[in-house]
Length: 260
Image (cartoon, rainbow, N blue to C red; front, side, top):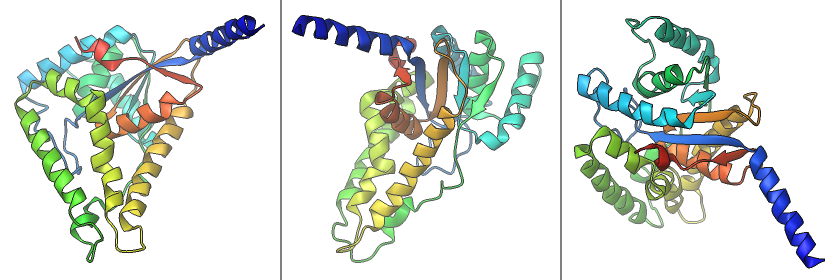
């Protein structure tokens, strides 16, 4: 009896896994201007940079996506797809939306034959005071967050000498993704005055934004045969990974398998 139950359990788990939609959730630095506190130096118009990102795009094509999602709000989907359509039709077309969207998402879509790209970002609740640690007086702990951020920025600075591919490999490592969540949200929970939650309340706003991004993803019509490629800033990728690990709908593939 116990053996039969075990076999049934294995069968059910395998069947549920087979029905999940495969997702390549890809972390990047922003390749165009960003108001983010941490920026990676990158010239999207430089020939070497374009060549490097194209090689990365060719690697990611091996995933064979049928749906592509980017860090653009859904309200701009018509603008996004008009731009993408121009890119598909004319080699000389100059894209209006630049950065990683044009350099990687458009290229992956073109080679893979994807007809439409979806924006899943959320901006209505995006604003939060990341700098609260430098503004709040009489903190219970004024050192933990400051020291952590200082040390992590040293790590980021050391990455500048890496090639585009090696930077992206680093961004997509599990260790880096955890650090991105920490530095952009969780570290704020150490910032407070006695009996209050100033830093935690700011961090919760960023959690809410990422939950809404996940909700935008969940509103895209998909079938079990679809394969979703998501390219967003690394912290959003890190949050989406956490949400999808527990999802009954999605199955994450190993991103580093496609960066070779």
